[in-house]
Length: 387
Image 1 (tube, rainbow, N blue to C red):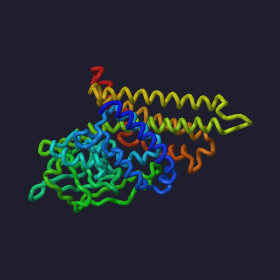
Image 2: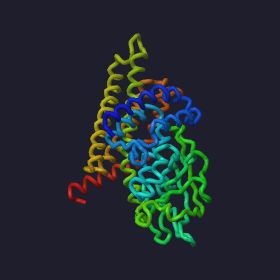
Image 3: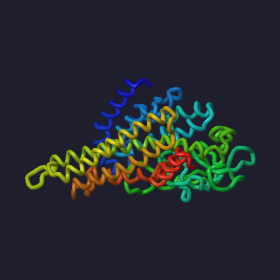
Image 4: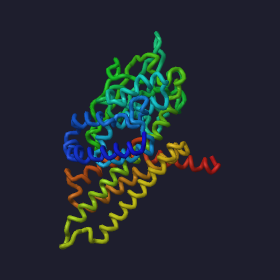
């Protein structure tokens, strides 16, 4: 897509976020639900498929084009972006990275249009940071196809998903590690697949997660992502999906940090103490300066990492560096925002209090900060010829 078209799309999303979503933030937080009109508008704007190629019905944004759009989405409650984030991100990329051409043509247009909401069913109770430990199994059915058994945890959009990208280990090749793991497309409503109650989370209210249970779930051979050649390739597919997802989350963190910074500056200018706006106090200025520097560094890092991702120069370490820095950075900016607001910042109904809770999750999903440290260190050592 032409950059001028992308600029127009970003501007349209920016207006929509500020005019339509921001006024509903408190309602979303209190009701733990996204209003239906926002879902419909997101689909109409093409947001369910901005990262899906145009040939499959999406907008086909490159990573560098996706970044400014996601930064605008980060301006408001993360729950709004979560509606369509998995379609563009880790779930949609299972198909982009691992599916056959026939599967892509059949399934991706449904994700891009918003007809389907997809879930990425990888995480388990004992397989979070290391998905190589997953216990869900796939065995051949007596009449062909596959039988899936297991349980998944913290699955985004599970209560409203139309389809699940389920990762399972070949029951005939048990063990640990990535070998033997495959990905399967499982429609909601398939006998044996059930979704547990919605999780009650600290923040990101309106973004629903839940457990997913698979009890002798029978799927046809066509459900195996990648066809026969995809058998045992699920772990590698998941890792490639997560690299894109980490850059996506990095951009989201930058957008939220920018919103927090502006909330901080606005409050400091209007709140008076001893007859003076607190923005005149140098210790307050120091907090603002630290947050501004963090936001500037995060924005530059994500832009550079996205360019390297698009060129193929770095699709591993740069996404992890960006995700590690930006997820930690937005937490610092949120903490300073609450500090500048003082007691007001600790009260429900104040944006910085809500965003403080929302931001904490970014250091956990799409790979914890500690996992990013491991990835970064291993890549650095390998590049230096010592590993």
